[in-house]
Length: 232
View 1 (cartoon, rainbow, N blue to C red):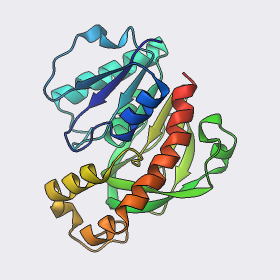
View 2 (tube, rainbow, N blue to C red):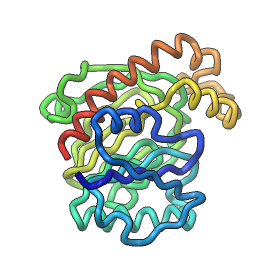
View 3 (cartoon, rainbow, N blue to C red):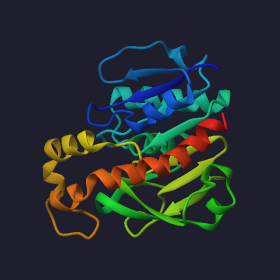
């Protein structure tokens, strides 16, 4: 199997459990941090899939590396290379291939319910998942699917939480973050926790029962992201 290419954008948002899942499946993986590592334009040409992780930033005011990454996304689409986008990665994918990204009415931070839509119950990537589950969130922007995509999940804070488009899967939420990564986000972006919104949890709410919540998220990742990897 050709390697799966994983793009990371911030030390607080590494592949986490996604890397663990790849190792368990014995799939080869190459990781590139776009903030500190140069790469050739043809880096995606010999890959079986691309994973785009989260990070800070606004894709509507793209930095140089964001613009270059969106060019790679469009090239991957031309080459029929599957893409998994998580949070910022999903927003970059939406922006690159015809969806919209905009600031949400409020930040969405903390552990929030995800509700599967009818399309998800008929889709093989979502097979074995419960009708609703809890996932970790930390984002200020929301995305809409590109034309022809199917919205798979929603919640009370962001109408589109996941979509499937051709061989691509976009997730607004995080299933990969462990306790350390969440602690680092709280420390680095503590100002995001200010304000009065049901979509923004306090540090105390986020850390409550965190071990069990992470394990439950990993179990959802085993099904959803595992199904996507196996479809390659």
